[in-house]
Amino acid sequence: MVELAEEAKKDTILIVDDTPENIALITSLLKGLYRTKVATNGKKALQVVVSNDPPDLILLDIMMPEMDGYETCRRLKSNPQTADIPVIFLTAKAQVEDEQTGFEVGAADYITKPISPPIVLSRVKTHLQLKKMYDFLRDKNEFLEQEVARRTKEIDSIQDAAMIAIGSLAETRDNETGNHIRRTQHYMRLLAETLKNHPNFRHFLTDENIALLAKSAPLHDIGKVGIPDKILLKPGKHSPEESAIMQTHTTLGRDAIMAAEKMLQAPSSFLQFAREIAYTHHEKYDGTGHPRGLAGEDIPISGRLMALADVYDALISKRVYKEALSHEKAVATIKEGAGTHFDTKVVEAFLQVADRFKEIAQKYMDGPDNE
Image 1 (tube, rainbow, N blue to C red):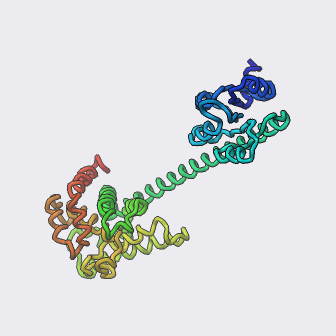
Image 2: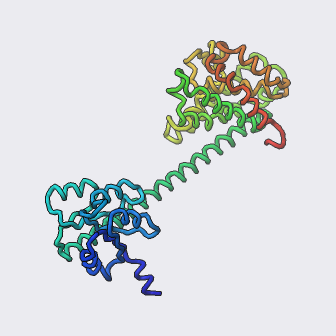
Image 3: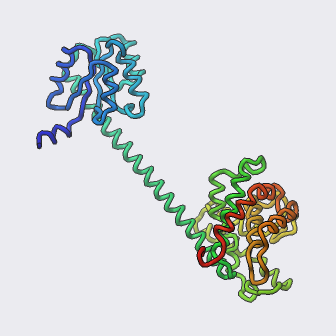
């Protein structure tokens, strides 16, 4: 059993030659140092290398019937499963152009016959060591790539959870459930996906940016934490003075997110869109919104998308100061606001997927089962 275990630890060399005398010579040379396998033609060699016990190195003759060594080597190197196995040509073809062809088809080395046993053993040892180093580096790189991917996913999950948690805290002050931010998050992604191929939006709505928009949407009303309860929770209509204070939640939200960005020392971080959304989602396309009265395409795309998503959800939701509208009436209201409250192109996209907005609203409706 010990002998079998020791044998299994040895590197395996595949000898490919159609001459029995050559096979016997190479086998005796390698005996005791390596495990050996034999193939008498190129086709058989290709079968051996894809077996459950592939070789670590191949000693390959060139002049063989049906499939010569050059073609065998080409096929080995074209197959990702076998491309990394080093091939050393052992051949009587000793012309410079023969050797050049050998390297061109992917050989690691080229030894001419009659062979020198010390040279063969030295070259075999060298290329096995190189392969081990290459395999180690490849495995290390694969591990590092997997670890980076795992940690990146973990960071994304933490960011998502933090966004939703902070957004939910803001919503609870407004007597709303966390389902409002879930719904608006899904509305935002749906609108963005619908517009991603539109000529006016495709430059911005990349897959990466769409993911960031959805990630950032929960912070759209984060500034409400700075609004006094007597104004934020007032069941009736606000006075002009109260409305002015209420409107400051956009600036408060922007400032809070900017402060976080400064701490991260990353002004172009994943918080960029959260800052834009918090600050501009109450701007109106005709310039009558707040806080800056931006109009048309001066309003960031993120703000234009959030404006529609937020208003639709407000229309279909019951509040202490109003009853909920039906989906159909909400759609009609959004449609009437095209070109005034909302970007016409965003409204057109909304109308294409309005039924899916309704499905999202039903899936994440307010209630104890969905909180």
